[in-house]
Length: 126
Image 1 (tube, rainbow, N blue to C red):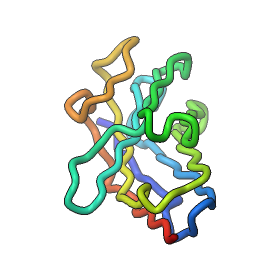
Image 2 (image 1 turned 90 degrees about the vertical axis):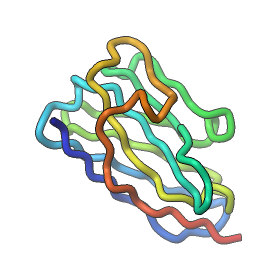
Image 3 (image 1 turned 90 degrees about the horizontal axis):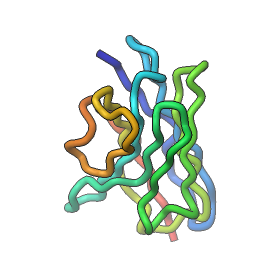
């Protein structure tokens, strides 16, 4: 079982950038497809971005695809979400997720991921 811990959230102004990190422990992250999801108050948890085991395949939600690149450093057991040009509507708790069942496909559904972190709050003021 892998344990995930997110960091890097905070309060920023519209247009600013943040980089979220997801540190994995317990198992090597290279065995997992990794994803980022977010959940705003009163809304369902939604897919943000995902990356395959070796980083060769990436998927992103249309609303953030060009602004939030995802990357991973398997040597550091860490996955990143670079958040650029932040908007107030990006305000949410951001969750890191992992799954060992997916081999080549990057999942975009909540049920595609087996392990979850506790989340980190991102608040964007206008």
